[in-house]
Image (tube, rainbow over all chains, first blue to last red; front, side, top):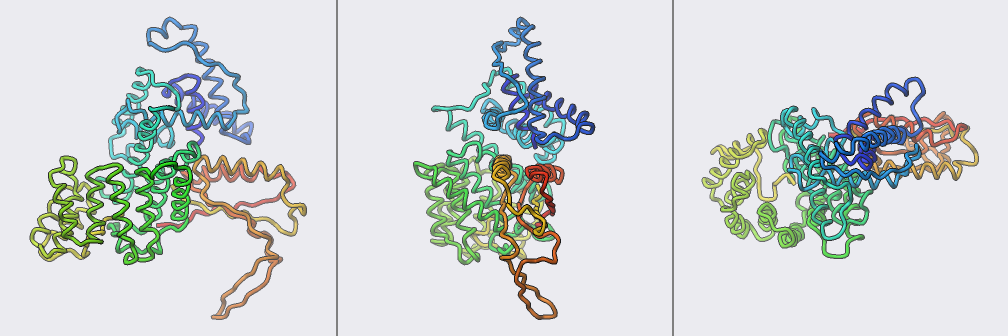
Length: 414
Length: 118
């Protein structure tokens, strides 16, 4: 896992993540040749970084001899020289790592490219691992990464941490990439695996690293808190046969207390460094914390959850959040009030193919005794979900014999 | 990404009487910081000596409580860490670095065990 730090340190010198990654790779090969004879150095990361940096400086010097050629490619020729010693200041590397984070998540790249590049450069995943994780052919992912690197180079994306008015939007992009990676693992949108926990944990690790790199950003802690709390439930979210277990049916003794504790701690930190009202990630973490605090499903404080969703809807309005708010409202004010919110969402283009809309609507109709309509909704939801396990569950509920698991609102896999 | 419990075992009878040096604690602090920054270290702590500990044993339906120190054990747990890493190789790498923080006159064993989950 030293790779991201090495790549970051080298990018500072060569200003090109593609070249930096190659040089980091070269350093690793050199290490594998050298270490069996000389023994592994005390701090392998520092050795790798120094080696890669030396190569980078050599490369830059060679490059400057080709200044004319460089100009054709449209690159700047002033490279910051620095004394490259073996003793690498960890704080410098932290800064470089943060620059690399902002570069990998740069808005000039598509969301897919940001995810792939972040997993590759910062998560230390191989192309094959990423391909498996995002359910795309390896060649596609490899191409995606190559193109992303090229885009960063040709668009002259600066290797810097943004400050000023730009910062919030750019940080938003970074957090969103990590959240996307997490979600890809949390509710695998397709395939037969209900959970691809590997990705969740890659995202969680990235969030934890980010907490150290940006300790003063409340939303970074908010995101980390949200992911810690969501991960705390992963052991309870699937039955031994792989079928999803809904929040209400989960055995809470299988929730991971250490991760819950870490989630609370991160949420507290988010509040401590925050000067304004909580941001969207902190609010979502606060909702997850409400569930974590309830010893049993019956203890869930739905009133507080509904209030938090109302804040979230005001802060970051989105149809999905509105749908979740409806579920909380159904628990405090009953299914009729919730149905009004859901029906208002039925024409939302963003939710047109979102299986949870008919699924939630089916729940509410069922509770109101409108069984036939409910079944239609479940059938529709089953046709929309790309997750095989979930489809089985919904199909069972759409048949007249009824499903084995009686769901009620609030039964989303939180 | 698996999680591991690392139990740090020391021989209380032969551990340096003066305890860990200031330099050791400083190096340890720096490493802990680095491991936290790398998103690897989830929890860690040292334990008080076994002379302050108790053993509660359950056998044939009977409970017996024994006061420390646990002199019959060659090595006792002196601390623990919970790590989450890509694979065993990464955990072993961090563990080696943790051990190397100690001066040469220390004998320390880190028992690395994957936490069974799911």
